[in-house]
Image (cartoon, rainbow, N blue to C red; front, top):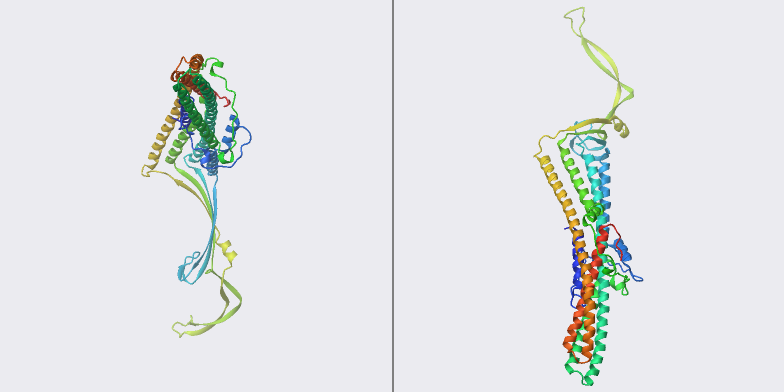
Length: 512
């Protein structure tokens, strides 16, 4: 079952349990909200002014509920994921720089010669890469992330719908609990009047003392029912405050507007085509939209996994330059040094003659090795590179194939979850209609029963006052009437709640 149907079921059980207690007395174990109240996480001390209507309560809960706000943050996170996937289509560009010191024997990073000295070097590089083809994975990632973003937005709306229904359920429980308190207080007042008359009859000798004891016992029972109903109203009020994320200590005078709710028999017999309601709800309910979007997202995930079968082609470029303190430049000076060189030559005309020394004076300019300048080195060492990189997958331990099969299974799961969401929606509509129809018929029968038992109770009271009916029999007639009134109230509020659920599925706003 989906979270919405679960919450509806819990809310219905809680409402029915509150109504089905012994004569007009509420259960001692109230129905809890379907989700943890937001006040359990945060309790802002907001003072509520004036009575709260249902619409005001729903609006306030939607604004301050922690669950709604968490889902909204999920939407923002998915929006950033989508933005990142779009940015992956752009080329990458990075610049790096480093500075190093080398001691002892090392290789000059620019001349690649061994040298034994301390060398300081700087390396600068810039590189850029553009993916030309990657099996359409980048674009499929964008499409999948866009679908996930829309699904998360539908999840927010679903959470808001669940919260609205939960607030409406708790609001009706409080209305009912207050009505139970007033009804039981009325019966206590009737008991007190009856005891006063019984004492007069006892003094006149018209009835035995046991009759007075029976009346006093009935008064004690009804007073207990009042206390139980008041406790139930207090708990119902606390549940609503917690769901609204209101601090009970800061809102001691919190009250609700009691709406003027029509009786179920004041409108025509409920008749709906549940299939038409379902067809319309399936196009509006966010849980159906979210499930369908996740099916599409699963399909894109399959395409994304299959993209790993294709080759990958990328265009890359880089720029490099560097500096080394060990690099020198030869500088020829303006002055020169005379060098005398003696050669021994033989007279070419006289073979075998002795060698004759010949002195030659040459002038060689002075040469000096100086460290090369920083910016000069950067200009001279500047290099560029452009390359195409092609990667063709052949065999990688069947990782791609396994991943594709897993995504296909996940897509089948998403499809089944979408079908389950539709089935749950249809069942929820059919159940709500059946419950509402049954409650309307039950209310009509209970109303007739209350009318008949009212006449019976009045007749029993007359006979009791004349000493013709025992106190036990009179209390039985009175309790039968109380029980019938309880059944009538149960049918009334069950019909109202289920009717509002059906209105919700038809796209109508929640209003009492």
